Amino acid sequence: MLVHKLNSNDFESNYVLIAIHCNNELFKLAFELNRRLKIQLKKLNSDLAFEDKGPVFEAFKHESELYNTKVHLLSNVSTGQSLNEKNLLFNNYSVSRFLIPELKKAKYLLKIEGGGFNISNLIEKVNKIPIVVSAYMTEANKLKSKYNLIFE
Image (cartoon, rainbow, N blue to C red):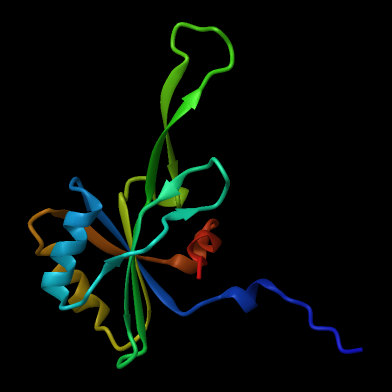
């Protein structure tokens, strides 16, 4: 019988990850990216969740068969309520969870798979959007939580 063992390289994907700092809502950023980059980001039918009652991350997706490209715009922060089991003064408090904890300061992530994008030109266009504070490319393969970006 033939046995195939999986290693972490089997899950490696060729993608670029761009961190975006922006104080606006995700749908406003998606609208601006659609307008500036000439893409069609659409909200996914279901948000990203890794646990039953865990954090939920909003996600938008653009897919181009012509250029063999997938673009995902993801929320990096999920804020929810946490219940304290003891009878203390403050039973409910807000808790922030991160899709990529190493990038806590980035509110949104842009994941680009395949295609022929000129990444430096794309980052320059994103930085020119008035609601964007800054955008920069990250080294996704060095992130400890890079497997959180595998969701399809």
